[in-house]
Length: 393
Image (cartoon, rainbow, N blue to C red; front, side):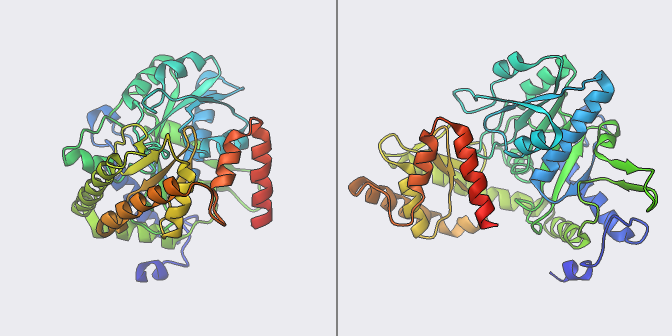
């Protein structure tokens, strides 16, 4: 990472000193926006944004900006936002940080955001609704076009979480995959979050938050005029930011280019389809919904899927445990391209092992996930999580 080392001392907080890093950030934002409809006439031609430390910060900033924009526009002082239950937990974090009432709405039978259900929760205090492309749990794209129409009709904000899909979906569409609309070409989309450190293959700690125009983005900034340390203004949550990571993101995007991302997408989308086919050939398993991208969630009506996950973990595979329904998912990356048959073989063996010898393995997490899912008092589960974190960090 020679470029990262070269810029490891830089800090874009000081724009006048580290002008090259500021230019790198502007170019990363512009290139990312171009993938997501900024050049389309329907986008309005003002797409703008900033780099952040990751998807969580991008989402938090979008929520903060939406809250303050709607306060300025409509005078909303008791803000509320509505999200599908598949939306990322960063929205919960933002709601706690910024004192926003959060409504989490069940998804529909296709595991997508239920537009009709979301509409029922909209009231005079609603500042924001949310869609994902795709959602983290099941890799399914929400009906962004319908959500955009809903947001436009009520004059509220719509954030699209593209943290996973931003560097895949534009290229999957070019390759002919049936990708539904998801970007700023849709009327009503006011902001989006895109992780460069995922499928953009940039260093960890690099994401982008985008806005439809500068009027919305201005509410992201914090300006301080009465500090004895001088006049201060900062675009993101962090004041000082690592210029080396910004330079690394710029270098990754320039190195790969559109052709590189297109080739990567071709490979991982093909592997995703092969994995889905392999799962369908295992009678004890089912795929959750219809994945649109490279995240494939699987469950079982006859086995404890978390026990299957423990066996897979013992074989070196690290899958995410999910709930509602109980399931696990694989997020396909380039590392899986040469190992897809190994994965499917180990999955078949793990299912066979659990079927023949049901029950948790020593050190496995299946009992924890199973018990957590059965506890009706969710505040108790929340306390368990907080105490676990308090004892481990």
